[in-house]
Structure formats: C-alpha cells, structure tokens
Length: 119
Image (cartoon, rainbow, N blue to C red; front, side):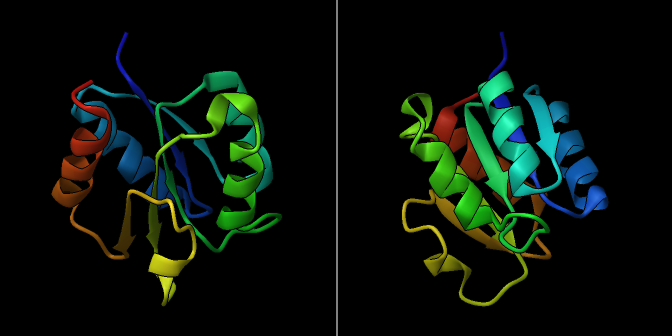
C-alpha cells in the first residue's frame, strides 16, 4: 500500500495542485481545508506525512499540529510547512522543512522522498 500524504490548506487550488503532484508520483493522499477538519481526517486516514499551511480559518496550522501530535499515534508525524507567511521557519520547530509559496513541486517531492521514502 502506498504511503499517504495529507494536504492541509485553505486554498482549494493549492490542495488540488499538491494532491495531483503527490498522486502523479505514486503517493496516496487525503485533504483538509482547515485545522479543525484536518484533525478528524488525520485520525481517520493515518497519513505518513502532512503538508501544512499556517494561516487558515477555524484553527491555524500550528494549533492543529500541536493538538494532533499530542495524540499517541502522531507524536512523530513529519510535517512540511508550505506557507506564504513570513517567519514560517519558526512556526513549528520540528518541521522537516519549510517552503515559501510560491514553490517548486520538485522541491516538495524531494523533501517528501527524503523524509518518508518512495511511495
């Protein structure tokens, strides 16, 4: 079974774009458009990695990620921050990478493969 990546962003175009990039490289995907929904999706789908926007409605990315990693099954879940906000490298200290929007999809795929391996 391929590894699964969860894309969390409030911009549906970014979500669709990243989902297509990951699926084109053989990964399974799931998605959420805010931190509140993302928590439930993560519990149900058990992703191997999350790409996470910071500024979203209902619950910001760092709040969601902190809440999720308090769950026993997600203590070490890798996260890649993808955001247009300044200072993104400080948002989640344990992030495996921080990528500024706009981004090159090949950079994202390289980080994913370096972090969780091939699908």
